[in-house]
Image 1 (cartoon, rainbow, N blue to C red):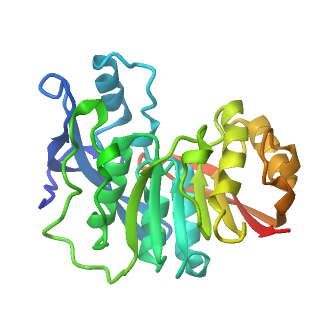
Image 2 (cartoon, rainbow, N blue to C red; image 1 turned 180 degrees about the vertical axis):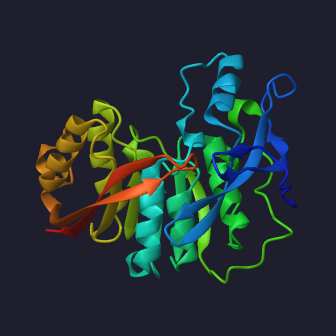
Length: 299
């Protein structure tokens, strides 16, 4: 159990609170990955996140482990995740009573928001095991009680076991009955991903051309088991990789264009609605984010 110390470092006007612990890895004695908590503002509501001190600290760990190419971006709060959480708080009926997956969850802000407003189940998914641990601990930091541990097969990155998901002595039960779990998901292996979801959440996932096709294939596969129908919510800054965004929109509008996708003949996008929202990150930097709602139905 953890009580947060409020005498920690500050990031902009958002004070980071030390959790007086670090995530283990083989070189932790030399390059620790210290853990913090911070409150992220999502419209009129704050959500507490659990995270490393900064993205650079994660880069230092990966470099020390001989993997400087590993992706550290899960450790930062992206504008898209703030926009996603704000949409969920403003429109709780989007997820209430439904089975939801937060795709490439990072710190888990979207999934936490869904659990807080009444989702029946939330699955945090990422390819980084430490991101899954942070996302689940973030749920506990917001008073969500029914949070499961990371399954054993994903709980030992670099052959070092992660600690149990945190519990917080100073956080009361938020009243949510949502069940939250974690799944390691590689976008390029859709056949291994879980399925049967009513709602898929994603933000800032279209950063490489290869990811565009992979995400399009994976998103439709995630609805298998629900007659192929559901809602996909994407938050993506319109000025970041615009060609990738344009291609993704074209693929989703006509799944027959997705390379190698075998389910295209039985799923269709019946409506797409988009808005542009202005969001702040932890450094109080503003960015416009495009929120797109895709309603997917079986043919």
